[in-house]
Amino acid sequence: MAAVEIQLPEGFATVAEYAAEIKHVYKQYAHLPNMHIVDFFVTGFWQTLPREWQEYFEASDFELSSLLSLASTGQLDQRAPESLHSYVRAMFHLRLNYHGSPPTDQIEKENHQQELWYFLDSMSPKKKIEVAELSQLVANVASESKCSLVVDVGAGQGYLSRVLAYSSTGLPVLAVDSSPKQQRGAESMQRRTIKRLQGPRAAANGFKWDSERAARLEHTVMHVSLDNASQLAEAAHATAPDARWMMCGLHACGDLSSAVLKAFAESDATAVVLVPCCYNHISETSQEGSVVGFPLSLGMHGTWLGQNALKTACQATSRWDASPEATLAAFRRNYFRSLLHFLMVAQNQIASDGVAPAVGKVTNTELQAALAEIPAAAIAHSSADEQDFAVYVLAALTKLDHAWRPTAEQCIACYREHGGAGLRQIAAAWTLKSLAGPLIECMVVVDRALYLAEHCTAAGRVRAFALFDPVTSPRNVVLVAQRT
Image (cartoon, rainbow, N blue to C red; front, side, top):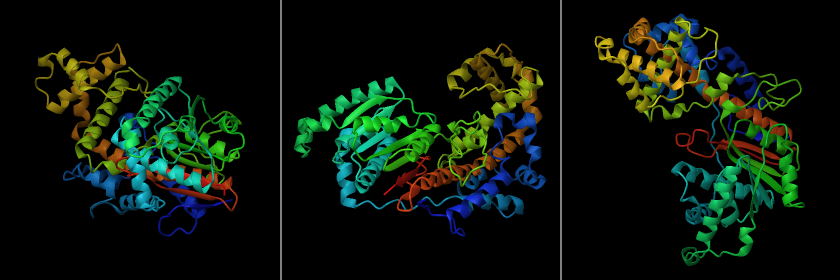
């Protein structure tokens, strides 16, 4: 078994010791990340919190804006009860320190970035940074592990694949994606990129194109899952029978990340470099004998997170302070959605234990259309917040194509029943829930790192570290495993 290189929080000597502690702490507070915000009022979730927590957040001088710094930095004032301080301290202390990314030679990095303009012009600023950083890391790992083939899983439009194949890294790449449409798009962009690389500007900048470069990149459509991950090795061997090969993936979604790691564990792949995302699409439940996406390792065996908790792991609390208006608006949307569900249950439109319909984002256009349908007299003597809720209810039900329409008076009465206290409760509960997100992400990362280590010899190397800025790219952790 290989050693796992992760910068652990202070006080932990081994990854196994850290894994045991985060499992223990998670069980203690699991009810918070597993809260479903839509059911907040129907289930009476607020009343399940310690009374001293309720009193702290319900104090008349408590400011909603203070929740932003609480989520981003763990800042609580001295009036907060010790039990709340203890929860916040645990959530921040147990987060992994994703520092210590491998140093890159600055000249090598600058040269790499200078040639990337040929490939990055159609990408968003966020994607440009991610592809630039990850392509350099993959090239370095491929060189260290003496790999002559890279299998890019979940390649999409082929952004990373083209950089790996056509830039100075010059790696043969098999780009794998499950969507024929994505493959066609990738091949179209590939032709445009080749044309640019063959042009006079590239030649003037010293870029020498040769026909062999075009053969470096192949695309294939393949649906990769936990049940058929072995086909990645089969495809690699069919492409280059005698080659040492590795896998990579940029934001491989949910169980696709687990499938890539499983393919590494069960094959002769020399290395894997993976940036996972979409923890909410990781499977935990399965039929007897089938494979699940979490947990993968023996070290996290028996751990259960829950679907709501995995969704919580996708929260980017590091962004809250940077976007205060957007965060406060999100609190309000959660409040309205929870109130709508409460109203529907109260009016017997849905069972209290029924599945809440997914409304999604209600657009300004939909809100304006709903407002035009409400008689002005029906909301004339209500507050702006009450009116906004009545409009939201009509817009949301229209979006759902639901036949039932409450009166404006019913909506306003529902809002008055909960008032400003309800918004404060929702915002506080959402913040407490979101604070556990990074801890849950750590549990997934540690599980995957341990799984990789369990399938490498002592001579191997397994690392997990932050590759991107967490504010720009919240899913910024990369897993790297090398067998030799």
